[in-house]
Image 1 (tube, one colour):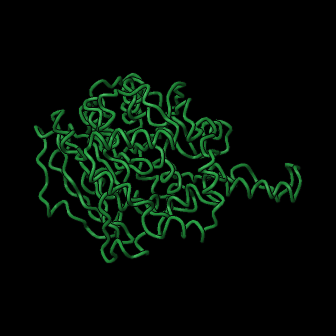
Image 2: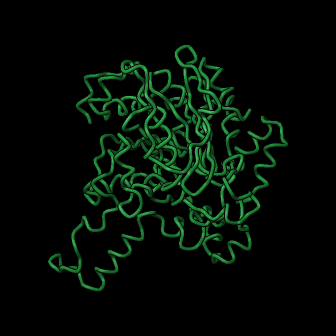
Length: 424
């Protein structure tokens, strides 16, 4: 069943849905996970979209100024919705964090299952003229702004998986929307997608890299990318669809269910795929794409390399600049925490961690990093031991990186060790 509230009620929680408007007019969905024994959902009028302005609205007053829950926003990966954080019953990351004592919000990018815009229709090509940069600078900003408005906090904890990490890296870049970093207390990146893994060298991905932008649009259209996938999900029985979807995605992306609860496998793909623009897929897989450059940071790195070729390797050459000149992030960037699958063939988290360790990003402070050797791309969400390997550490890092002011009015999440506060 493709219903987040259904899975929440299975574990004694519930979900309310907010409508959020981006600055370019998209209406996107924000799910709030809550404990019905201590929170009453807002009215539909209070949960509707509030217009395109971000971070300028007056914050809602909160009647309770103590024992509050610290807000955490979770963002999903490519071709998925945020429901992927909710399919493992009590071992789902969203429900685990909520029961630990956090205020959990699930953000969905534009279009999703039901494309909606204030002035455009789904048949209008302009509604599909977007890629990962829009998801970061517009969708993530709108979702963050709404959570802070509803909760009244100055900052929130951000947890992202796969593409969600990419849009965050893009948004936080010093050329894009670096001020967003001032609203985030910590960025927890699960299977961070900044460097491509060996999987992108497979023949069908290489074929897509050979297509010119014009040919890519001719083959895949100028609207949604293969929309029939969503139609198939609607007509098939959920269990049948879930099984078929696993085999298709397993073939395409090379992962297995070796560490999942196979009785729940059909659930895990109820929230995938969703509508994604062909332009977004071209950003990932087309010519001059992530798959070809194998790094979202490649533009800056390539430019720096060209400078070295032009001016030689003399470190005193003023044309070369300093190491910090090619840094992706500004001083406004929040602390980072990384959980990397050591057997992830889709993305290479080790290269990203090496970039940080080598000092190429002098403004980035990595407060936690972990490589789980046996984990593949989706295991950080769905492995049977993901709470032990990932969830408990995310819970601790979120608490450690809260400001003193926030910690003074928030409850201490269940299972938190205050003695580990010095790790931040």
